[in-house]
Amino acid sequence: MLFSTNKKLLLLFALIFIFSQNLFSQVGSEFPIEVGPDSTFATGYAQDDVKYAIVMRKEKGLNGADIVVQFHSRSDHSLIGGPITVGSTVVPSHMFDEALPQIAFDGTRYLVVWSDISNGGIKYRFIHSQTFELSQLYSDSTLPVLLGGNCLHYNSVTNKYLLVSGIKTQSGVYLVYNFISTNGYLSNSSQRVNFAARKEVSLSYALGKYFICFIKEDPQYSDHDVYGQILNEDGSLSGSPFAIDINQFPSDNPIFVTFDGKYFVCFFPDEEPSGWKLYARRIAPNGAVSNERFFISDDFSFVPFAAVGNGKILVTWIKLPIGGMGYLKGRFFDSNLTGIGNEFVFFYPLDNKFPLGNTVVFNGQKFLCYTTLVKFGIAPDSSIYFFDGDIYGTTIIDPTLVEEETDNPDEYILYQNYPNPFNPSTKIKFYLKENGFTTLKIFNLMSQEIVTIISDYLSSGNHEIVLDASRFGLNSGVYFAQLNAGSYKSTIKLVYLK
Image (cartoon, rainbow, N blue to C red; front, top):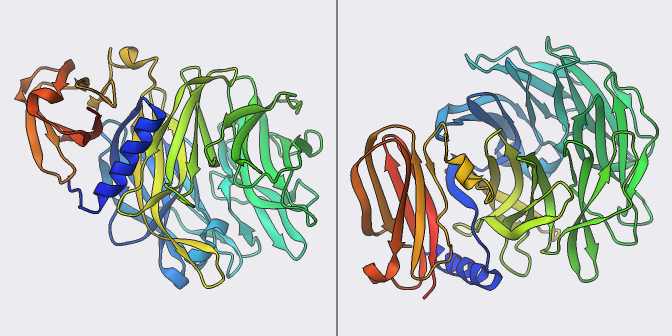
């Protein structure tokens, strides 16, 4: 665990932010997915019973990128093998948002789909979930598509994947769909929206219906209108494209849609005179849109994502570092889209890198969030570009279910301390899957060990200790608690305010 000196200022800014917002941290320890000298960007996520899969672009500058998949364990988040390269694209790094690789799981294999639009065409490949064997490389040069957002879904009823993408024309981008069979067969393209749209799209499935959410492109205005289209399982239209949200303010991309058990829920940002806001609307499976416009956040909300679990919706978004500090933030909502608790921060800047994009998922027991920490640059044409990306993940603690989660977990867990910030004491809870030698140590910002709280052979099960900062003469600031038990290692941030 190394913390460089130049992180101190950023973390102190984070400390000030936490204090001013009085947030209760619900975020577990961070774990790396792909970090190092190569610039990588996470673009998609899938999971099976024992592991997670992250698909990413490993950038090669103007020469495009390698398409890479990294697996990590559900039990302790350790990496499973090294990155698996499934192919490459010639789409350069400054156009990466037009070629975001997608991944989905069909119960036996993962399908990875990516665009190679500079030469025209789409490419895809399967990875066996047990042997990691790669299938042949499939390609279709006649389908020059843009891949943006959450646009690939496997349907166990039809045993097919649905891919929604965009065809770029002189008059704009037109959304199309293709089915991909588990034998690799790619169906012909079918256009399902007869007007131009933005390239970003979000896809959800429930109750035998696909719901596609997108922004209508209006040449006279700045993408004001959020639209939707429902498809039947065979791809036939269920009604016509319909408006989800129309107002005088620009609705910028990307947007996101999920299903909460009863409704599709579409999250979208609006650029209002007072700043960026994040809203949501519900859509019934028959296409009926709710009259109520649900307010989510006003914290420069951008790039929304959401996951449903434990009867709640966890919504996440990005605050870009324009005129201030950027971070990845979120909040829990109940089934009525009423906020639960306060907003809280998942990822702060690290080494002058800021969160860009995010994926939040629920694995049946807990929520996880992924992001790419990147550096920002300004191109000669004044556009913003991103580089030097590192990919991290973290767990999120549902505050209403912490006790239930600790009853019989199937893995090692270090929970976030509570309260946090604290003065002068805080509780640190953890769960050990097996008996074994265990240490719990406190480090400062310089990665210097301050004190060893535990160094002993402990039995499996729940454990709780109280850290009293006054006992060790700690000054106000940010500290780190690191738990080591066997091969398991996890770290959480502690904020002490005198």
